Image 1: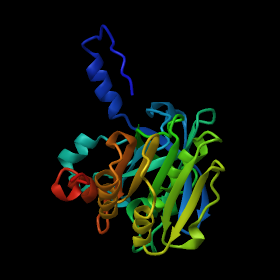
Image 2: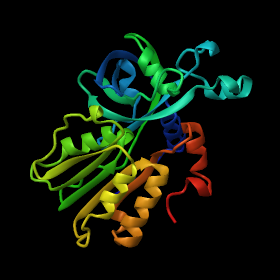
Image 3: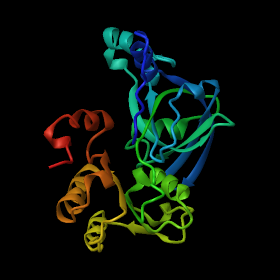
Length: 285
């Protein structure tokens, strides 16, 4: 990635950049589509779409700010004021890949995995399941950093249900002549989706035990890493193990790999994000 130096910057520019980074866009629910028994697409849109830092990475993500009903808070949120006066009412922050951007309609789609019944579902899953057209939500972003490189000779994508939107977006963006393999783990066969992908890129679903995904990656012939580009994002424990296989054992250059954990077993996102600064949350040895 190249960065172009700007010869002159006004003293106020860093302040404007900081404000821009923390900007909340308030969008409305425009529609919902059940893609599979456990995957729900929510379409958000509105005039503040342009407040988002739109980018063209296939793993672009936004952070939803979800306040509890009992808080009585409405978006946008003055997070500093809430933190100072009633921190227990701070909106939950949840990260989601942008599956589609529609600049003309000023809408974006996010795909939410629904886990269990209402009692077991997470904050975002409960919000998505109950959301109705016209409901408003604050979000910030977008972040992201991966896109398939056209010059790569082989693409290897590894993920689970949480990474499926980013993998699907990557596959759809590839050149028709691209070659590679996408390994996607799902707990249930009925959650498989029809995803467009180049003829030379195999989309292989791994259904059932998560360990099967690790075994399949271990069995791959990755002796030739020239021109290889890897996307590997899934549960934290498995991501750590796969990093050892890809980086330590197979000696794939770290610069050729986009790898991080999207979630961790037994953790809600607040804990998961906080642990990234601790030893338990690091995926690098």
